[in-house]
Image (cartoon, rainbow, N blue to C red; front, side):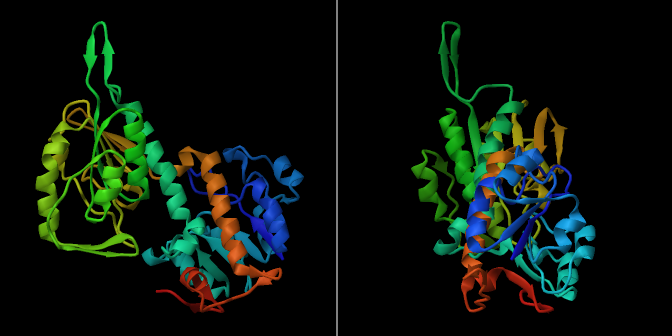
Length: 367
């Protein structure tokens, strides 16, 4: 089987789907690996490193795609890539199929079997294949470091001959993988940390990391697959009232809330932003899906009333080497699950295979 690792084309994307260290595992699975020239350059992996690990270097995208049976990438296919695909090929990347997109219909019409990495089911045996979790972990760490860069004060309490500096106060919206890592990072830096989430089960996890959990008593929340599926208007109003005091005290707020397959919820209105102290900072991790504040803008720093709102669409791309290494482990583990006796086994009754296979034999398998 011939497998090609493609170069990412999105602006600001610095990661690569598979790093040289994984090539030995792919070879053992029966793959002959080709890498599009320059695919790993921005993540600090050279063509020479891939060659030394046993890969062939394709001079261009056309060569990498047309001669491969399996194609691996991080992000959805570009128009150029779609035009080069042919029936019977296997495509593996994030596809974000719940949000629609012309690329899904194009993959279906081309007869490509397309697996979506972001559709990985949230079950224990799929954890090592879950790219969303591995990348969110790094994003949570980087969000705190980014916030520290924009703040005009330090995180820890500092006692000096000139007096004592009080610790920074950090408020985190959303206690998923990214939120938990943000809590842990802020605590390690010495901040006083509070967190809130619509899921009451997050209270224990938050407190285990030494942070205070802001509790709202209300049953207007429904969850599915680890995400909030539906949140009542009454709950959102109660949450705003409960967090306003913490908003006014915070030096740094990090928002991480996403709804699977939908626009990110607005957690902070313009009026709530204006409750913050001059010089305080918001880092909006959901800005790629619309943002959690009413004032966030993708890949911009918005200044409002001497408050900075930092919106970064792709936090893992800020840490390309580590992010690529984790992605590569997720993907080579996923391929190990899909392949048996050096060929794809197509076990469509398996929850992982079925959950991630979006198009197959010109059929759309997942709405």
